[in-house]
Image (cartoon, rainbow, N blue to C red; front, side, top):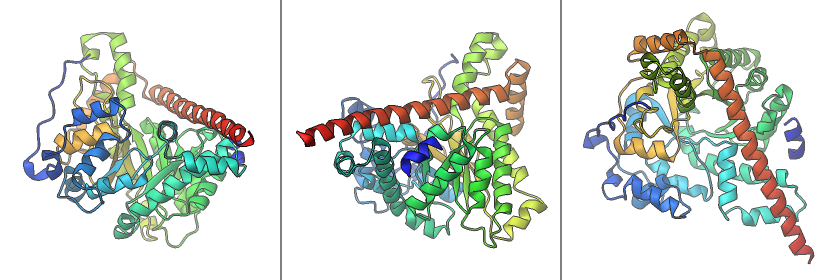
Length: 432
């Protein structure tokens, strides 16, 4: 089955964000090594991610720690902090859960890094190859085990929130990004084999896959829609979710949920280059502002679309809003504050998924305050000013989507090539 799936298948340096009151800072940070020291340790070759090492320094068994900014983010502002990473041992997530992490996202690049840089997958991979599995089938077996194990760890959160939180996301093959029906079949297959109530099947928001989203939702499968880079495409994603709920024919919609992963930092990376090419003082003054401005306007669209008679009719059947999930939250430009894509996008019924760098920074000195609907008029002004300078938001979205899909395909293909070579080597060793 798995083999068939693929076939279907320079502003001025910004000041650091102010430290929040001690009451909202992590208790374990006081004696844990600094984020910089963790980065050095990773560069020196240690396997553990810095955020996991930090959390484990104070609590290695997953028991609740003292309050961190992540707990306050959820309890005070209604935003769910998720971790944008997954690797073995999956039990390394336990101290993060104790520190307030409420879900996990993964993608082909994350698994490419995890599997190619760790020996934790070797035993299972060897068993699979010697049992006659090909490289791609073995890949999916490795991934599915990680997803199932992570789902188990987050299941208490899923149960406590009545299915509103505690999800783990796994993406369909990136080779299917332009294959509508292949994506539907892959999503059904992944949902069936993972067989966990709190798994999100990730589907890219390409033009070809928007109809896939509707059909998968209509089949009662919860979806994380990924690679959203523009408001126009985001609206199509919302419509696909609502259309899918209506087409499902289910009398109880409470267990069919979704998040829409709206990417942030990559928008600034591209638009900043365009602004530097324009080169006028007006253009240069807008660097580092595009991504957050567009995200705030996406939240305005969210408020509009999930209201009114049509939506209320679905709510009566238990439907939950498709939450906005802020993705690509790590800062690419070192001149910007390292919480730039987290602090300004805090608000209720949203998710922020953070890789190590962003999660470390936010725990250390993030500010827990409702910001998502603050200064919306300023965001509108930035959005319009960029249009006047000739920035075409839809074209920006299309370019970033192509780059995102291509990046995931390359990571996926690269890993399969290395697994194939490794598998062939194993077979030769056994035959000698």
